[in-house]
Image (cartoon, rainbow, N blue to C red; front, side, top):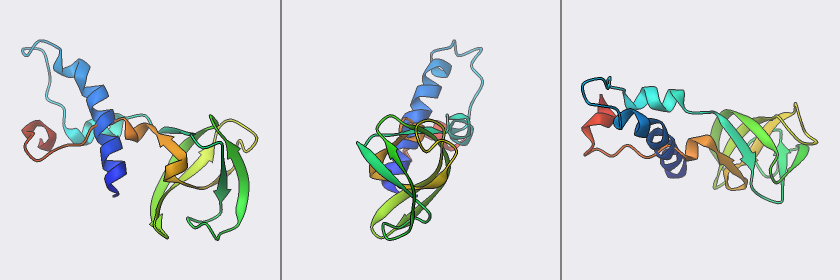
Amino acid sequence: MSARRISVLSAAVAAIALPLLSAPAATAAPVSHAALVAAAPKGCYVTASSAMLRSKASTSSTAVGITYRGNRCSEKGYDYHGGYGWTKVTMTTGNATGKTGWIRDDLLHTMAEDIPTCIPEDESCHS
């Protein structure tokens, strides 16, 4: 898993955990880091002015569509190829709605990027 993806997952965990941590200690149930990550939203959207939707996680693979800034997607998988992180997506809005393919991570924002990183010193992350 790339460092960027881990940072994103950590930010999402914080967003979910904050309301849990603000509850009175007597009523707060322990929640594992894995449970918080699993509960995080799985959506994404294009941040670049345009991005090619590709058949494989490679800039040399066939383009199956083009997406534009703000088009939304759902995440299906991840890969690292050719010096780039890639996310397999199904487009949910825009001109490529319904198409599935790969988009470079630097052209997308994923909800996983909003989950904070679990650090070794934080015992609550490892329960």
